[in-house]
Image (cartoon, rainbow, N blue to C red; front, side, top):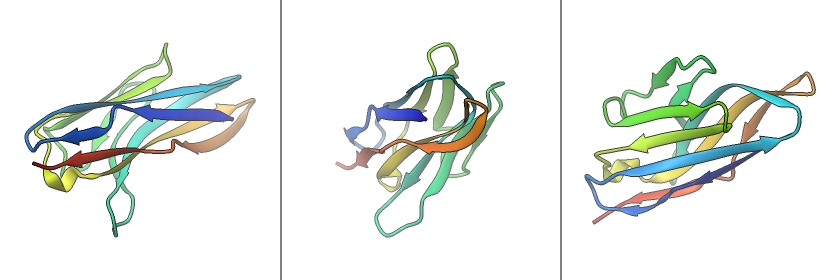
Length: 119
C-alpha cells in the first residue's frame, strides 16, 4: 500500500498563490507517474497536472502558465505551485500516484485538500 497525504490548501484571494504538497509513504514501493486532480462542487473530478518519474509534465489548458507541477523523487513528494489563482480554481485538490508495491501495480489517491479562492 502507498499512503498519500496532501497539505498546503487554504483560503486565498484572487491573484494569490498557494503551494500544495503530497507526501507518499509505504513499504517496498516505487512510483511512476503522479498527478493533481481537482473536484469542484457539482462537477466531475478533472486532471490539473501530471508528471512522470522522468519529469515530463502535462497541464490542463485552464492552468497552463499559472500552475507548475514538480516532484522530489528522493523524498517521494509531489508539489503544485499555483499562482494567479482565480475563483474558478476553487475545489478539493487530490494527489494521485501510479505505483508498484511488492511488484503489484496500483492507483492511489490522497484524501484531498480544500483550495478556496475568494475575496
